[in-house]
Image (cartoon, rainbow, N blue to C red; front, side, top):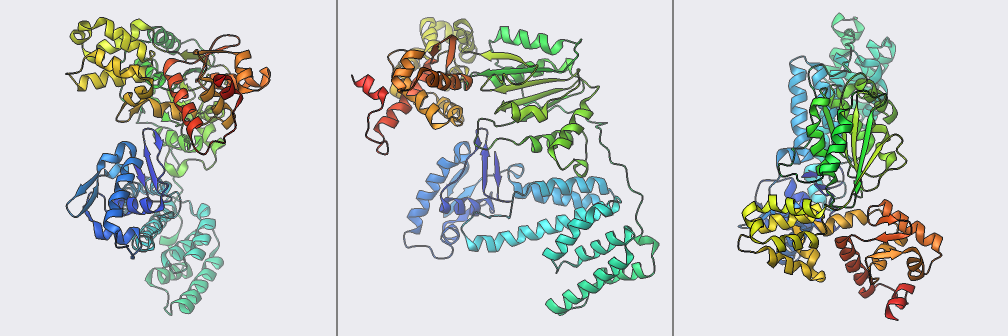
Length: 609
C-alpha cells in the first residue's frame, strides 16, 4: 500500500491508483495522514475539512465522509478505524511518502556528517525523487496547507542544501551552477544557498563572479530583510579574498556505475500452492535454461484478466535462478491501470539496484537504457516485467546481451515485439482446475464431493483467479459444502458478487482489462454478449452492430488482442464464461441506465424482434 502527500494526494494498492475524487474526502484523508497512527478528534477533522467553518451537521456529515472514504481506499479501507471521539488511520512508515522522505533526509545528514558524501548524495536524491509537486497541492484546506505544506517545503529545501553540499564535496561544482542560480532567485533568504553558489563559482575558476554574488546577496538581505550577511557567507567571502586552501575544490571522485557487492533479487515471494500450467511451465523452463543463444530470450505470457499470467511467470522465474546467477530484476508496470509505471522511473530503480548511485543515474530515458544494457552486457540476468501495456512500454527495458532473459506478462501477445516467444494462456484444463481446487481445499474435502468439485471448476470457467477465490471462501467456511457454492454461482445475476474476497475480485480484474478500450470497442464487447450463444460469427456481429463486416472484424480483433475474446478459427469469436457474464451485466446496465439515449441500437432491435 502507498500513500502520498508530496504532490497531489496519492493512494495506491495492488490494483493500482485509487483516486479520491471528492474534495472533502481528500481533505479528510490528508488530515488523517499527517496524524497517521493517532486518534484525530472529530472536531479537529471537521475544522480541517470545512477549513475552520464546520456546519452544524458536521458530526453526521463527517461520519458519512468516513464511510465513503473507506470504500474509496479499497483494500486499505479497514485501516480507517472509528475510535472514541475521533478516527484513526493506520499507515506504516514505509507506506507514506512523507515518512520515507524524512527517513532518507536523516540518513543523508548522518552520512554527510561522517564524511561519506557519495552515500549522502544517494540518500538525498532518493528523498527528492519522492516529490511529485508541491505538498498537499490538491487539498482544499487552507488550514492544513498552512500547517503542513510550509513545514514540508522547508524540509525539502534542507535536503536540496544537503545534496548540494555533498555534490561540492564530490568535486561536482561545475554541474551545480545553473541549479544554484535558480535556487537563489527562488529563495533569496537562504544564505546557505548563496554561500554554496559562491563556493561553486570560486572552484570553477570564476573568482570575480563569486565576489559579485556576495555583493548581490548583501544588497538583497539589506533591502528585503534589513540584515547583514551571516557568518557562513562572511567566511566564504573571506576565504575567497585570501585564496584559502580549505575552499579549494577536492579531487573529483570517480562515480561507481557497476554493482560489485549486490546481486539483485527483486521477485515477489513464490506461490506455495502454484498448480497446473505444466505444459507452459516446461516451455518456459526450456527457454530460460538454454545456454547457446545469440540474442537475449524474450518471452511474453498473455491472456485474459485473471488467467494467472503473473503467477506463472513468477513461478518460472524462481525456478530459473540457477540459470541467471547475476540476479533478477522485477517491475510491476501497471499497464492495465490508468497510470502505468513510466519506463524512465523503472530504469532508475533498476540502475540503483545494480549499484549505480542516484547522483550518477542519467537524466534522460535513452541514456538510462544505454547504461542499463551496458551493465547487463556479459552477465546472465533475468528481467521480469509484469503487466505491460504494449510493446512501446517495455522496449526501453529490454536487455541486449545474449546471456540475459526477459519474462513479460501482458493482456495482449505483443506481436510487434521482435524476437519474442509468445505463450498465450487460456483457462486451466478441467483436470488442472480440479487439481488446483483440491490443493486449496485439502484432499479429504475434495474427495467428499467429486462431482460438485467438477461443477465448481466449470462454473469458474477454469479461470485461476476465480478458482482461488472459491477455494479461499470454502476454506474460510468449513460448514459450507462445495455444492452450496456451486448453487450460489449458478445465478448469473450474483455470480460475480460471489467471486470477490478482499483484494481478489474477478469483476475488478475484468474492469481493469476493459479500461483501455475505446468506446466503440467497449460497447461491442458488452452488447454482443447478449447474443444467444457464447460464440459470435463475423456476419452476425456485423448485423448486430449495424456495421460493415470489415469494421466489425477490426472491433472483434481488438477485443481478441485485449484478451477479452478468443478466436479459435477465422471469423468465429468466443466469450469465456465469466467474461460473458461480466459483459452481459454491463450491457444490461447500459440498457437500463437513465443516461443512455432512448433510441434502439441495431442489437437491441434484433434481440427484441
